[in-house]
Amino acid sequence: MIAAREPVFVLVHSPLVGPGTWWPAARELERRGRPAGVPSLLGSGGAPPCGWRGCVEAVRHATRLLSESLVLVGHSGGGLLLPVIADAVAQPVKGLIFVDSGIPARAGETAFVPSAFLDQFRPLVVDGILPPWSSWFGEDAMHELVPDAVLRSALLREMPRLPFAFLEQRIPSPIGWSRRRPPRQRGWSVEVITEAQHLHIAMAPEAVADMLLRLEP
Image 1 (tube, rainbow, N blue to C red):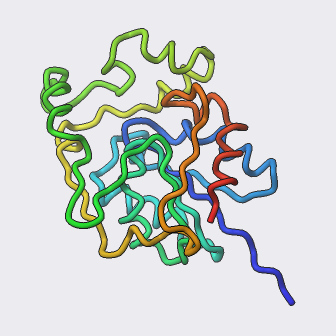
Image 2: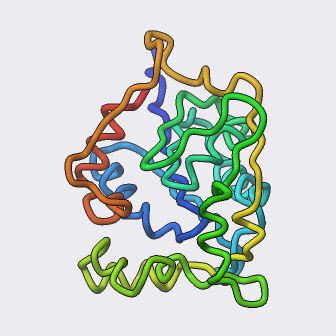
Image 3: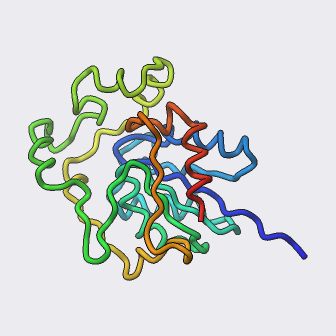
């Protein structure tokens, strides 16, 4: 008998940042013998993502040659894209894991950013374009999230300047998407990493890899 190959972890970054946020966790998973990939949602030359449809196409294109099943993992705004990504990829999807992310609506549409927050970010817009996410909450925010100067600099270089219209998008929920969970469970499994912050996926890859392996369907 030929043993089935293990699913590939597909780590989807938030469109507000870059794929480098997931690279440390991907390397840690691979160090443990588990395949992992980090599709970039950014356009050519680091251009901003081309709407939610462009993000979905980026993941579909990046995974098109894989023959294994997938476990889709979304961080922050990347989590809101998981149902439509699962609907678009060719491979079987074993499960969805949301990391510091909202949960998309069971049906209808999900706002990428709630209207109350849109009003908060609107004053930052110049000619329809937002500054990089790192500056939205003050100069000290990234220093607190990522104390390591080398890693922080690498993450900052990737962050796109998004059109404000990107934040105004509404993402459709495919019918029945919320049933993509292990059949033995009635609800979603939840894991908490003590004292974690938003970019823990880059700062503490060992703890994040532990979490993903525990949550794997």
